[in-house]
Image (cartoon, rainbow, N blue to C red; front, side, top):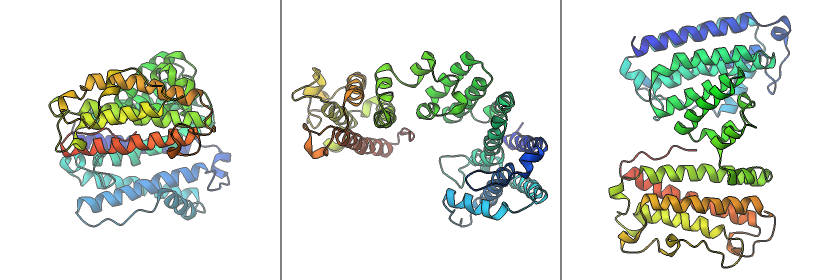
Amino acid sequence: MSLKDQILQILVIGRELEVEFIAGLTDAERAYESTFEKWSAKDAVAHANYWQDVRATRARVWIEGKELESLSQFEQANYQCYDRYAGQTWAEIETFAQQAHEKMQETMQGMSEEALEGPSEESEDRKMWETLIGSAFTHKLLHYSDFYHERGQHEVVSRLWGEWADLVSPLDDGADWQGRVSYNAACSLALAGDQQAALEKLRKALDLQPQLRSWSRRDSDLASLHDLPEYKELVAPDFWWKAIEAGPQAEALADQFMRALSMFRIAIDACPQAEWRQGETLYQRPAGLALHIAQSVNNFSMQKPGEQMEDPLNQIQWQVRDADKLPAQKELLRFLNEVEKRMANLIATSDLTAQEELFPWTGFTILSRVVYALRHMTHHLADLIMELKHRGVQPPSWH
């Protein structure tokens, strides 16, 4: 079956799901008086099909090579959608939903396989079929699942997302797509009460998409896993959990550092070994930039004067002219593992409101210092990522 045929089949199934959802609404749910802050089922159907209509329209314009109009900010667009459709009857909304479905069908049918595999109007990093499937199927399922959840119909949610995974998984075998599919499969299994199977799917998802770790801690679909030791091991090592559980400020700092450090490790691994120590200037050598980042995080992790980690990499100047003296990637990663523990310990055990004594230029409190360290790290991580891009290396995705 061609990609287009698969996508058209999925589109039909998405519409059937929507019709089933509407047919199953109670009289009270159909009559609910909504607000923008608390949508009714009718608002959700209107919202989902508004975006399906918008994506179908923009996809046509994009494929024809015409100029696209700028989209409103999502929150503004959602408010405009609500304002436009909230006063309409169910009959009008159902007619609109059918028209939006037919418009998307016509849009997909008019596209070549090459166009479907090409970049979407939304982002050059996403394929056209991803955007179309997202608005015509996945986005709808997200909103309609919320209503099934509210009714306590968790088994329905699990079934629907399991069917979704079976349908969309064959569309792309890349890590990005398979990570997202595995994550949603983990959610459906967790809702169904199969914790071990959910953990296995989640492990695969987080290996492929490490940026989902943070979100998973807030995802209510995974609530049954959150207190399990196996889940905690997947999300963060013990030394970070001490920071995560030390309070809201410490948790926020730990979360942002873990994201940045994950990107940093991917960037280090991505650099070709032959180019690791090479650069047109001292400031363009990946090994030097990476060493500077790790040494700086280590330095800002100090808790008392003169407290330094005894490690050979602390003795190397990142601007040393002899590039052979810079550490290998494996050695830098080993050093980074120890540095990370020091920063986690600082965040977990410090009074973040205490006056900053060691690095006064970073601010007035230890909190200021930690934020400064994070800013410094991401600044130079951007330098490293740009250097990789200039060399044609795929950089880490944003976490």
